[in-house]
Image: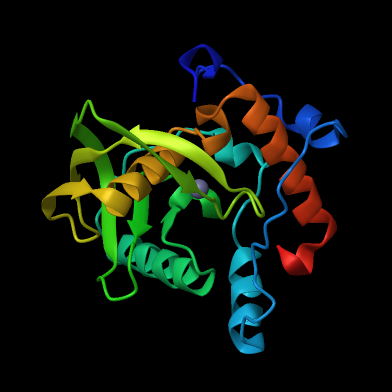
Length: 216
Ligand code: ZN
């Protein structure tokens, strides 16, 4: 990734224009987002969960979420529901904005054996200067896989769904997911974090996925 090419996250992305434009000259590696060998039951559950996830073009994905002030039963249920949706959608992270809730809440689980982590009102306390590039997908961008540079390590202060203060020190996939989901809370998508050319290719992959919704 060249830095000249990097898009300022503050620069608005004209998503709908991108969605309708058709750059036939752009070569895209077609990647199967949903392998055919997925168990039909798992696949059906995944599609049902994905139906609750807002997709690119929905303005809520560009909104900034508001801090949570009430730690009540409703919040705990919201976090639990997010965990279930994420799991069913075969995702590793989900931000509340992705299901249309403007709360600063995210959930993640990098590996199947990990417990679900809920971060409410997460604040980035520290991030390493070292950056690492890695592939990311997004439940709001079916079919899109792009290489994104992130801080290798982060320290985040947050509360859990019960209001207890927590500090998370993360590296590897956990650090990547946390940064991805925290971006969502500020209306930032992976498309804003990649060079223009990669974004064109991503938009094309997205259109392909939308043409064949069952494979997305
Ligand atoms: Zn995402």
